[in-house]
Length: 445
Image (cartoon, rainbow, N blue to C red; front, side, top):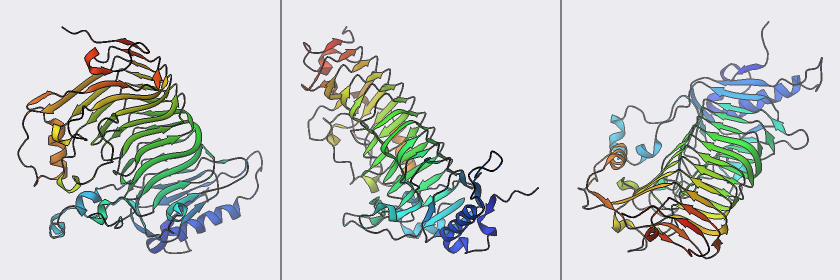
C-alpha cells in the first residue's frame, strides 16, 4: 500500500520549487495538517511526513513556516563548497574553476530580511506555542546557501559575514530535534534555537557563516557532535546560554570565529575530545559557568596566514586568554594547548600572551594540561600568492625554526580564589596569589 506521507517537492501540484521552494513546502505542510487532524485514532495520531528535496538548485523567496511535529525535510547531498575562496580570487579566474557555487540539494535564500527582525531572515522558521512542545522535526542532508554578504563600509562586502539571513530558526521550545548532514553557508546565523531539549546537531558542515550554532534562551540534555564548523570573525562557532547537560564532543572547528565556544550560564556540561583551531585569543569563553568538564581537547591558536583576511580579527588582546573562565567548580583537565605566533602579531606590542585565565569564581580545578607556546625565530618568505588551502596547511604543518614563546600559562585574577592548579605549568609561568590558591608546578631541572 502506497504511503501518502512522503512528498517530493518536484512532484507537487502547487508552486514551482525551482523558483520558490518556500511556497511549495508551505503548501505541503498545509496538506499534512488538513489530512492529519485527529490526535488519537486507534492509539495513533499524527504521524507527520517526509518532504524530499532532490539534487538541484531551489530558490527560496517565501519563508518556510513549520508548526507540526514529526516532520522530516531531507535532501540528497549537503553540497558544501567554499564561497569565501571563490569570492577572494579574481573574477577572471572563475572560468578556470571546476565548481563555482555549492551544489547537492541546494536552497538559495533570496529573502530580504527586515532590519532589526532576525526572524524575517530565516529560511526555515519553526514555531508552535502550547502543549506539548513541538517535537521531532528533522533537517537532513541538504544545503542552505545565503549567497552573499552585504557591505558594511569596511572592505570587501563578501567578507563581512552580515546579511540578516538565518538557515534554521527555532523560536519555540522544542523536544528531540535533529539537524544532521546539513551544509550551511554564507548566512549571518546558521542555526539558532531557543529552549532546546534533547537536541542533536550532528555530522554537519556549517562554515563561512557569521555564527554557526546558537542555543539561546535555556535548555538541557542536548549534543553538538561530529561537526565540521567555522564561523566568521564577528560571531560564535558554538554559543550556548543557560544550559544544563550539554555535550560538545568530537567536533573539528576551524577559524575564523570570534570565539570557538562561548558558554554563558552553562552548568554541568562537557566539552570533550574536540579539535579547536583559532587565529585569535578567546577560543573558549566561559561566562558565569559552574561544574563543567573541559577535557581531552586540542586547542591551537596561530596567526591568520591568508592575505585576503589579514585585515580582520575579533578585537581581543592577547592578555584576554586563549581560555577565559568566569565561574566556579569547573574542571580543565588533560587538554593539549598549542600557541604558535610571531611576536609582532601579539597585541598589545610586547605583551606576554595568557593561555588560561581565571577571571572570577572559585574552586576551579586545572590539572595535567600540556601547553606548548612557540614562536618563529625568523619570518618565512612572503606567501602572498598562496591559495587559502596551501597557506593554512603550510601554517599548520610548519615546525621549522620554532623557539619557546614567553607566556603566562595560568593567570588568576584577584576576584578568583581557592582554585587548584596542578602539573600544568612551572611556577615562573603562573601569575596568581599563591596564598589564596593551591598550586603544584611542573618541576624545574
